[in-house]
Length: 161
Image (cartoon, rainbow, N blue to C red):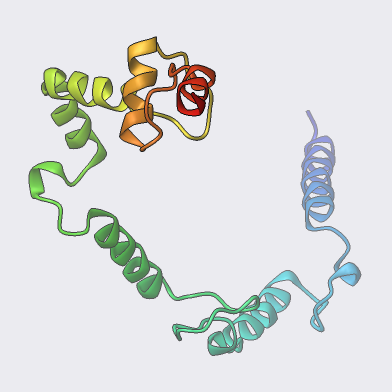
């Protein structure tokens, strides 16, 4: 291969690489920055603009809420810690997570069964229930109504006689 052929191949390879780089760079006139001569100048301009942002206009650790500001990471962590503390609210260490509560409940099946039975034996005021006659009588007596099976017509007839 002649020197001229080798130089032509090298020039062609360099031109292809330059064309590819220019395509990846894009059209610098489309930059929204003031500096449009090269990417480094445009990036430096952006860095300066970003550095000039007043974060106090965006971050507020005050007690008032805002739709245009956010808390700093320290304030966010503090708020999360306070919420967890309020949720735990002095619970003993052995019962201060949901897993520990679930384990404690699962380990006392007899107590839980007793609670479920006790709750099931309560008279509901928000929904209908199917109660046996003795349960109905007891419920009525508990709330001061008396015996619901009393024959009121017979009581009236007896009282009128």
